[in-house]
Image (cartoon, rainbow, N blue to C red; front, side, top):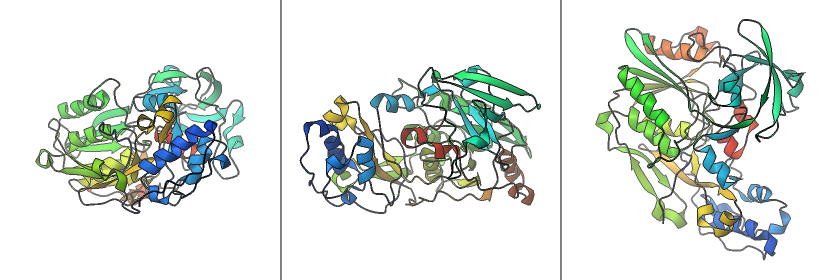
Length: 439
């Protein structure tokens, strides 16, 4: 069997699958895809022993309804369906849309949180810190839903769809821009720079998603390579990794980052283990560190939020047994399991361009740490301040990280900035888009 391409994840050793039952009711020819979904789930799903013993395919109008109806709801909020093209494009940063993210401050004002350089928004000059005051002529408050979230009604990501935004700029002026969605190549690195703090050189790296560079084998990111080479050339002694808007992505790229920042003395030691269901235990494996280049770090400060998920949590968990790990911001999302696409193992799914991406494995770090469905708790709770540009030391979370490196603590004044967001950008998406959230 080809080596499995691990996509997202971290582990929880909660429920081990028992032998799945093959009890599926007869199916009409037009139900072939649904039957293939069930067959693949019985074979590969991590909680396959929790699937219904009998599944009447005629009760589900769509493939999505079927998947949602059979997954193990107590733990699975992550399995999804997409197309093969959408899946493959997302993991190498081929996107479509406006190309920006947003975040709320403590006053529930909404700001651009990041912009992809080559996206329509990036080419129009949009910047982090611009306040969005109207969308399509309506004030932001008009888009609030009865549940307390927001639906900005921007349409699908299809090229050609346009929306009009009115922004309040940092200097107090306003500008109205009509932006047309298009295909673009997204970047993962939003900002990188070096601060001098207490006589130390401190690297700051805002990293938005774990995307590989297309065409490279083994799978890796040239963006990651260039950033790490930059920090090495600058002789940094500390590193802040900002994952506050990072929903996950490629495990191979997460491993690449771990191998850059791990100490040379820990090269060759266990990074993590993964386990599949009992039927697929022959695919279980250990992954060890393999040091790349010469960064020599004893700790990493992570900036996190509930938007930090999946592969973001993987690198935190992988490094925790070997380094001093400090988390500043808000608790992470809590996605301690992982997936890989199954169409390659089922001809019907492949032929019909259905990509099934259910939870298929669980991982644990070198200390066996696995269960964190509630996310990793932060050491210091500090509120988000998206009104400030990347690298601005008025940004509360960055300021707190720098303060910690200088003094070993975070002041009460910084902690007083914390607020619990009622709704975040990650809540606007499901499935594949939740892993790579952007509009």
